[in-house]
Image 1 (cartoon, rainbow, N blue to C red):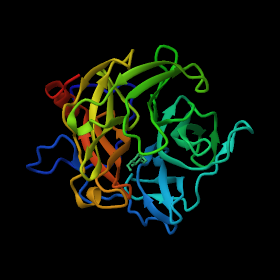
Image 2: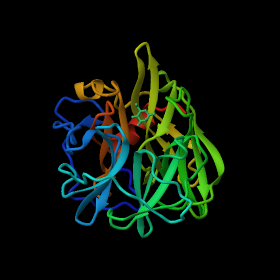
Image 3: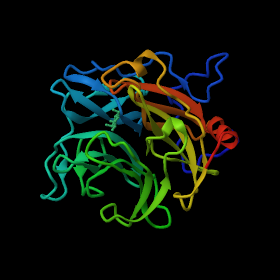
Image 4: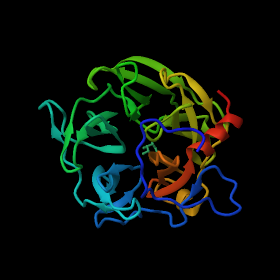
Length: 329
Ligand code: BMA
């Protein structure tokens, strides 16, 4: 391993497959995808853009589950190996930390990160049926305590960094509209307490053709000695609608609004049948990465066609070597 992961955890049971013989791709798919099928639960229409973290001897997660009435909900789950998941049939019912926090209307695209003594969930949360970033914390993935929304509507793709930087918590986010937003840049916002947010900084705008409509942060950034490694999605508008692919960037460790490297090309775009066919065709949407600090192996969980969940693999060295030769900032 050339590039060290900072403050990472050892995950000897990381779900993993070697790059298939002859494959030139930097990120390669799990051969048994989808790892979570749309009908995994009795009540599910689809289970896709979802987040997982190491927890106790295995893994825990928060899953985007759309039910058969097509309500968009969040469910908790556990796994011993990251491949076989025991997901609750019941949605998460958040306990309010303030009585004025609005009752749940819809929630989607969760991210989960461990910060200090607990796990934080951020998601696209409806406030008056308008999307913004919800925040909750949990210690055990059984009880979840909802705090204040981070922002006013309209915002999506809120992704926390795993530690304070320069004394503040940091969240990547993507101001949006109330629909299928045809624009979108990634910004970073800072907070001393995860309640009050400010010091907003621009990070990246759409640039290359594969991401020319909008971009949004994906999984929790991985701290490496070269910078924060961020996977992010980008959207192209084709004759047939949006195409969601994803790539990677490296952000400065101390001033993460500074982009050091940014992939010119996508790393994964919708190409397999489960990515191209489903409730929303042509979507690959990463929301979580597990990283083994000992080997630099990365397992990425990504939503496929807004229908099921896929898994793909790479390593810190593979992505950073690629960024060193395929970057346009
Ligand atoms: C975005 C979000 C995602 C979804 C994507 C493609 O706006 O709603 O949940 O995967 O569109 O439909």
